[in-house]
Amino acid sequence: MTQHVPKHLASAATLLLLLTACGGSDDDSIPQLAPATGASLGSCTDLPTRFSFPNTTISGANAIAAGALTVGGTPVGAHCQVTGTMFQRTSAVDSKTYAIGFEMRLPNAWNGRFFYQANGGIDGSVVPATGPNSGGGPLTNALQQGFAVISSDAGHNGSQNPTFGIDPQARLDYGYQTVGKLTPMAKSLISTAYGKAPDRSYIGGCSNGGRHTMVAAARYADQYDGFLVGDPGFRLPLAAVANIAAYQGYATVATNPADPSTGYTAAERALVAAAVVAKCDALDGATDGLVQDTKACQAAFDLNRDVPTCTGARDGTCLSAAQKTVIGKRFSGVTTSTGTKIYSSWPYDAGIGSGNTAFWYFTAPPNLDSGNVAFILEVPPEDPTTFSGPVFALTGSVDSMFAKIQATNGAYTENSLQFETPPDPSNLSALKNRGAKVMVYHGTSDPIFSSDDTTAWYESLRGANGGDASNFARFFTVPGMTHCSAGPATDQFDMLTPLVNWVEKGQAPDSVVASARGAGNAGGVNADVPSSWAANRTRPLCAYPKVARYSGSGSLESAASFTCQ
Ligand SMILES: [Ca+2]
Image (tube, rainbow, N blue to C red; front, side, top):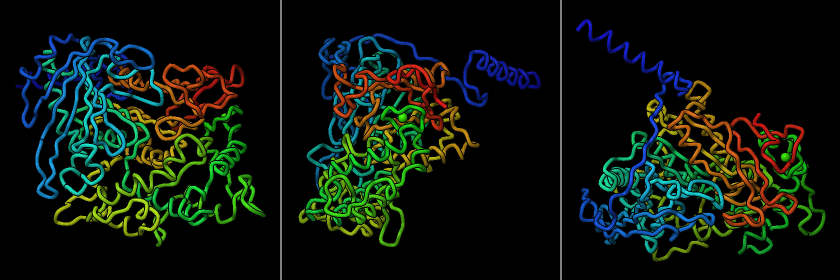
């Protein structure tokens, strides 16, 4: 006994020394996870007969030939597509049938890793499990890279959008439980298919997929080694109500009161963006159409001072005083009638007039946010037999929405902030302490989920970790990028590869090189790339709080001319 204890301690000390010597984590308290090793898929079409798991029905397994799918013009390798459902049931509340529908794609040449593809919108469809893993127009994806990938509908089908929220369990499945239910099944299926469980597991997505991933980081830290979070709606209920409030604000200055988009036209959005660029572009050392020093820009730009005020009719070259009040409020953060900020502020940036901005400002509130708030988020939900999304968005009480998304009752026992947002989001100690890693990116010009909100979260994470979270979580803003892609931006990048290298090799990413998608881009052209840019302009995306600054020499089109400072 007296010999055993010192021996045990000595082993632990030796292990730590070895980890340090191997170039692992710079923090001795964080373990370095071992790299994954690959395996080959034995057979595909007999998987339904060889696999069983509780509450799971496998409906089919199809061998997919190499090249049947492509990404960025490159063929995706041969793989096995397995489809199925979990937890099929009939709701006692709305009598409808619900299930968690999924597909998995298992590559013949497997890299030993699992990727959970967290999908966007309000889910409801099993999109192909290819594992898109970052930015716009990807040139690769997780399946192409050899991951076994799962995709799901998060517990309801498309025809049930958005009224699935009337069923309390469907709310919870959409909010967080689908990840908890699918993950052990998926790992078990991988074991059956390859003869071993995944060595390393990753989860990622953008928008609502970023929300799923941040929720998983808080709730399922034991299940995943790497988390790739894009433009996260991690406080989606608040963002949805805020977007409706902003829409009602635009309506007050609209030339056509029934059409709030006439309250802030495309020409006026371009005017404001140009004024921001005029004030802020050079702050990063390069006059290149990108505002890379976002923080300095917020101090330098003043909407009232830097955009002309109309003296006559609005013609796209000025804003009325009333418009400035509405738009300024939108950027500082809309409030309830009693002055409580509903969600977040928003940064002024070069892309705030372009990309998918108009869709999120003016199309989403009557068509998406309204039904989302009414049926998925509020307690109790609205009555679907009399509901009109456009009427709700234009005339509904924001104060009532704000209260009801935070309410519970006997039937709906968790409010939307409980089931959709990460509990205690600045406490990721479970994930950190087991050696898992988080990479987050967010377009600075995202018009639906604010990069200011993600910045505030990351600052809170730093605060909870002694002022520095960079040994397990890093945040990359994408200047000019709107929601998950587009805008005048370098929006094409692969963040999954650097995440794997960080998790499995201890190579922490200080920056990620991103490319513009100009003419001829294999991943699809981004129409918002200015004609003055090289079609293949590159920039480093820098780990916050550093920003990309021009080194003073070299081409403005090349990432090599910029450093993260
Ligand atoms: Ca610049």
